[in-house]
Length: 438
Ligand code: NDP
Image (cartoon, rainbow, N blue to C red; front, side):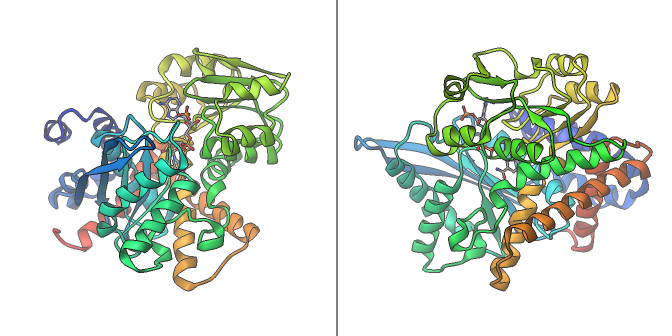
């Protein structure tokens, strides 16, 4: 079945990788549920319900016409409206969007919030663009995408390259072309116009809550431990913040130009100033802080730490990196990013007895809080920061329990990959079965 799917989706290596990881780990669930195979659930679940690709023409500041490509892959809506972020990055292609959309089905199922899976984006690169260029691009992107969205149909959010600024422009154009202030059609909005408290922090905080739950199974905690973090965007910054709040010390951050090591612990105000306010390269951090050094090239995973939180992008942590972390005594790895660890790196962590939280469980806090934003929009309520953080914390406990218990039940105790995939797959497959062949 996997080979057929690979042949049908030729030239999409990231999608193949994501499919393989799920299909190879759900065998125990399929043994218990032959009805899933008889009803063609596998063949259906790897085929998106709908895929949209479109031209995004826009004019740059020098009045030249630029053309990018837009995507939205609406993968599965058995559990609820399609839900998943938009990524703007030059590497975006159909394979990347399909891998992300496929992962999203299972991640969203684990949150138990009644949301389906989707992903979208563009090969547009926001780096170095003026605000006006970003606005014109976002408006052109939404001129096509709006017809496929809606609070009961498909609800996007941010991802790499899509933060508060981009979401503002995208939402504004949706409102303009539809003549509807439909708060629930986008999440990650500004808190002054329908956005939820803690959405900005949710993915990073959630990944650290998940790590804390994994440690608790061994009567340990984050308090007093060191953490190595990659990335310096939304997920990385708030993962660092929560590590520090729980008594840990985060030592690193990175971007595509290199990484910084700060043995005194990351100065979060400085990191936010450089990345969120001034939008500079990570080397500026080391220029302004004597305890830090910038390393161009090399691997951030060579820095010793007891916790590793890969929070930049897919396939950023190789087997070599895993071996370096293991020999330096890493105890827990939680994927803040989607599929950052290569499959052989994951196996190496598991064989070495390192606690390993796969992205679809560990980084589910972002989309879970997006679902909380949808609930607040629908009921016209607003929950405060601490209430919202408590809800996020509870959801992450639930995600951890679902994965932990399923791993036990299917004979692989402590294997969160098998646990997360089987728990989520059974939930989606049950819903698909009940809803007939559609
Ligand atoms: P941001 O755009 O805010 O930050 C991304 C960070 O990763 C930047 O520091 C960026 O550096 C770095 N990065 C991106 N691509 C590369 C690359 N090819 N090589 C090296 N560094 C790279 O994105 P997010 O923090 O939102 O997302 C990070 C990861 O988390 C992604 O995998 C995303 O899918 C995942 N995720 C995000 C969620 C969210 O709520 N935002 C939810 C769940 C998962 P540079 O600026 O130099 O490119």
